[in-house]
Amino acid sequence: MGMITSDFYNRFDKIDIVESPFTVEELMNLASIDTQEQFAAWTAQNGDTSYIPAEIFLTLMEDRAFFEQICSFVDGGEYVVLSGATLACRTSHSSRMGLTREDVQQNIQGFFLKDEEMTYSIESVLSGTREWVSSLYVFANGWVGIETERFADNNWDEDEDSAQDSTPEPASSYLLDAEGELVASPDIRYDIESWMDFVDMFSTVHEEAIAPDTPADTEGREVEFRSGKDDYIVFSEEVAGAMKEGRPVVVIESAATFGGMIYPGIAEFAYRMRNVVRESGAVPAFTAILNGQIHVGLTDDEILYLEQKRGSIFKASARDIPILLAKKQDGVMTIAAAVKTAQMVGLPVASGSGIGGAQIGGHRPLCP
Image (cartoon, rainbow, N blue to C red; front, side):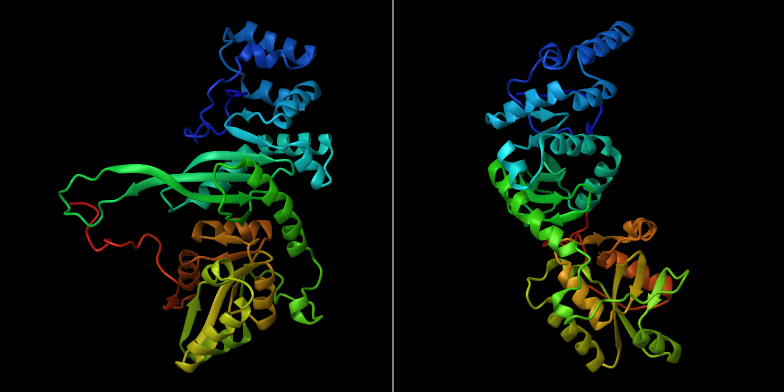
């Protein structure tokens, strides 16, 4: 119960079908008198009582009486869906994270205030996947969990002229932090309790991982990123020397290694990849974005840093590069971003774990 129709996230038209939603009148009765009067003034001016507009929705989220009421429903085991987002903020969940009711209200409200940024983040995560959002959860700390579906094509091996019957199937699950950064891809579906337990546990691990303390893997050495005052592309000494001397350089994506490999052993795997390239007569150039700068070629310390950030670092495609640079953030590069970087610096060879979209049966033309 508890669906509010508003202007947020309406592009995700497949989110959570609720069997017995509140009426607008029932929802407004949960709010304080002041909020009810504000809604009455809006309806008098617009003549529409069939939905709650965005401006009133934000007022509701600031209304202590309303928030207390919906939290009591959540604690009672009800599925409360506000504008397409299921509230996963039971008191037991927020207490384990040391959050007060006021903290939770502020975090939930912040999610709706940043609707454009969060929408962009979700669309970036789903870019190229052919998936759509089927469920969206907002947690007590403002983090966001999404479950997706996609069409199952069971007839890829049939003749091109054969009719293909596709049915939706569960696809993936993603966890984003309050800033919209992808932090994990848990194997959780249709289980709000498991979602909350995972967020309770992982948020602690994540905060420790992104803390500015010196990583233990660097044996007490602080990681210092090479930078120039106005540089937005930084080359390692090895890569810079090879380019100056005209020796071959192989650009390597970093998302598959630092965003997909299993820990421990990520850094060791990266070192071995570099050595394979060197043994073949070329110079390896892992690419990543560190502190808002594109790095072409990574030092040992920088590789250890990315290993330490595993699972909590943004996987950047080509279109994400300027955003991460502007925000002075970190990101590992997908093959698309690595190829774009190679093109920008004039290096003709790039290596990756695969090209997105290459599927079994992909040798057939997509169009007749």
